[in-house]
Length: 165
Image 1 (cartoon, rainbow, N blue to C red):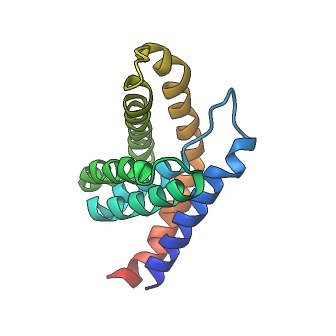
Image 2: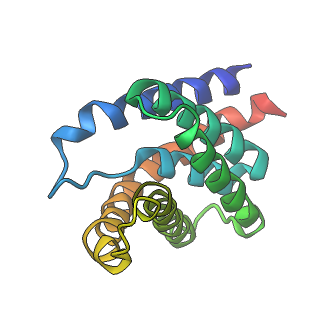
C-alpha cells in the first residue's frame, strides 16, 4: 500500500512538473522528459508490469493536464514502460551507465513515436531535421536530468520495495 501510494504521488508530481515548471527551464524550446525518466527507471528496476503501469498513469495524467487527444501519451508511455521492462534482468544496483543508456534510448523512441504520429501523418517528412533539432537534444537534456533523478527513483524503489512483497 505504501509503495503504491508513493508511486502514485511520483506519477502525479512528474506530470505536474512536466506540464508546468519545466517550461521555465527549457533551452531552445527543448525541455527534459521527466515521464520517460520515471517510466524507464522503474521499468528497469521492477520489470515490465511496473513500467507499464507507471507509464500509463503518468501518460494519462499528461493527457488530462496537457489537453489534446486523450490516451495519446498514455499509449506511448505504456509501450515505453513495457519495452524498457525487458532490461529488468540486466539491472545492477551500483551501475548508472545502464539506466542512463536506457533512458536515452527510451527518449529517442518517444521522440520518433511522437514524430510519426504528429508530423509524418501531416506530410512533414523532414525526419533528419527533427532528429537533429528536437529528438537528439531532448534525449541529451533528459539524460543529464536523469543523472540526478535516477538516484532519487532508486532510493524510493529501495525504501518501498520491502513493503510491496
